[in-house]
Image (tube, rainbow over all chains, first blue to last red; front, side, top):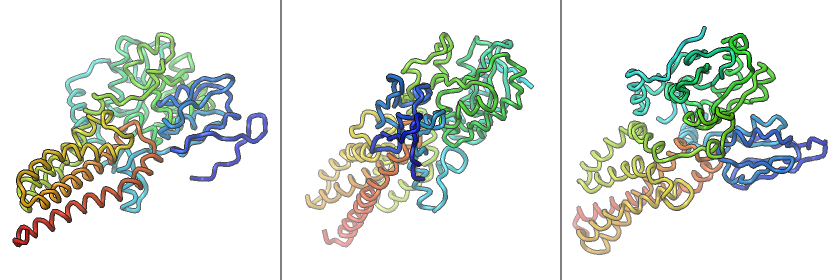
Length: 108
Length: 323
């Protein structure tokens, strides 16, 4: 994964990220504009509504689908998204090829 | 061009579903992408977006029964919404192109698109708005909740949470059996020829445990990760073999080693099948699965080959009359 670039808060000061040690989800509350989009898209209910900004209530439940990141208009969320599929990873490791998942040439 | 469709499944649709669920011609369950009309939609009717996998399109049109609406089908290469979004074939670009191609702005007066929530990993709502003027609204995870969602255009926490209930787990078993068909048939035959019916039964138990029982019992097995859940299931399923071996093999120390060999090989095999099931679920993260691979694969390899090695040694010992 690329190094996370220094995040800047909406008011210009540096923003500190928060997250869980068991996955790559990082939330920068200083950049949150409270649009609530992440509340809609997260299928694991990681975020909840908060005062003035969203709150990351259950980061450990994140399955790194990336929905919140691509739908956050202020780039307040970063996650190294990908498919949690052992078959694809093991196959890629054994054959030295790229991870192929969900579609042609997967699951066989 | 707007193609009319219905909320009724024909006999052909149903056959298609059966084949899709069995993994027959799995890349061929496709709907022609484009704009469809359901009932008699007018310029204010809602526009729903879905993938061109038949099971996805059909789930949507059945759920929209009695609701005059448009369905915009994206070309996701015959892949369901969630997987296509992960693969980025259900994407911002594809949605923007389809909206333009269908000249949607000329078909409806409003500027709203309703997408399944699980399309969100592939689509950037604010970017779609910038490029088309249409506002992307994420509906519920499941098509079955759309009617309720449309009452006030809001989803409950329940409707926004992905779940993996018994029925969803059970429906995967035929496809999984098909994927493992060759080893399921070949390994028991091979083991029967090499060592008789007991090792052949062990292989059948591994397939049954890993492919059928594991998905069904997933939430009931203790521990969090798939590999250790699989190991526990394997140890449980080894009990009848252990009982048989202890009662029928002399001397006792040989019976004990046989038992350990059977239990560890079975446990490792089921754990490996279980680990490979991660991709079929909507529960796992890439980081989690990667950690699981590094953490458990060495143990699985040691258990599996240790078990087989011990069995081969014991069998040779018995064969040459040493034991």
